[in-house]
Length: 539
Image 1 (cartoon, rainbow, N blue to C red):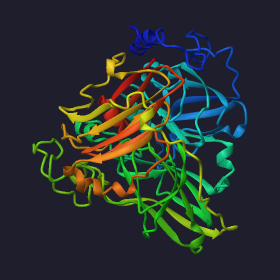
Image 2 (cartoon, one colour):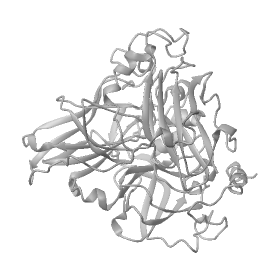
Image 3 (cartoon, rainbow, N blue to C red):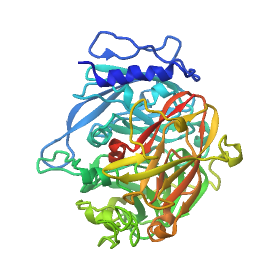
């Protein structure tokens, strides 16, 4: 029997045939011998500065006391280039951290040694369509996919994760995700905390059974709301405590959870100084009472622990918030069976109450603790200005008078974008975009009236980063929105934006350089697998 993935891959060629190759030479499709079969070959005219090999395989790691946990692990090694371009995470399930520089050309060999098809997506990176990790390019057991691209992104903390059709949530949950950090000269000139004082922190939630194995439920209610684990892991470790010196740190946080939204706040009420988001540094530091971090989003904090005594501790917590509308449309809309609107006991509304998790969405709980274990080596001054950002202008958009509207809806056990569920090779006329244009896109999550379950949706656009231009909220959603609005970071380059119930978010997104298929979807991974995902054809 022919593999459905291979059939879908062949179907893609009909789009490749009508689009030009944008600033990259795509590898040719071929077969090769060896431990792994080659799905494509290295391009003869692509000369990489760095070559990396990533191998996906089943592994067992010590996460909790007692029995080891079975995970899907990515192991890596540098074949060419600086040895510090990749750092394996041997003591956890996280994939290796890749650290490269803007302008470098990289070739990555992805070997699949798992008992399932899989493919990796470079979340936030501006790469050719065939290198982006579209599900139709998933490879089978024993196959290799070869990525080749030049790093065009500005400095920032990006990430990569599985993007396999109908299996993204389970595969990311099992361990197929890691950080991808890009550096450049402009950022380094700012002399921000570096080395041991620059700390990437991946926040995820997981559940375990009595044998310490990962527990994952995909019954329909869990898929509709998104998976919520029963304990928080940071950098793949439970009960995480970060030892620090009494000085300034750069904390780089990723929400790598399947669906959980975090409302970040310090236990002592200290404000948070934000210096960066998904696509790197902001123009200047911004101060917030708390910060909202949805799945797929990143935020960078500048924190001076020099004001704290040696031996003191402070905890970063997720504070309570409303996750769904209450007192109006309710979960099912229109005052249906799940309508009405009593808040959960610890926040989170009806969605929190029905989660069945020990940590309902919108409740309050600890994320990790910071302990000052030694004195600092000196003061670090935060620059008043960080990095210039060219502001995108509505008047420059090709569709300034006719924004592309994407309606988000959850009803009849389905998750839809403009009333459509995901299908490969199903691009509609309003999903075709001219290359090298700036586009206005509106994500409408019930702004004009709810259509089904009232839920927040973190919307992700593949390819080039975008800028958030405007947020609008209807009157029925004001109470829910008020519980998060002060923590929605303003400005900067984004690739994922949280759209709350009753909200419409307008973004400006460039579609430069590359033609082909680029996805847009909800980054609640259960919603993505449920069909809340579509393709844009850039031509």
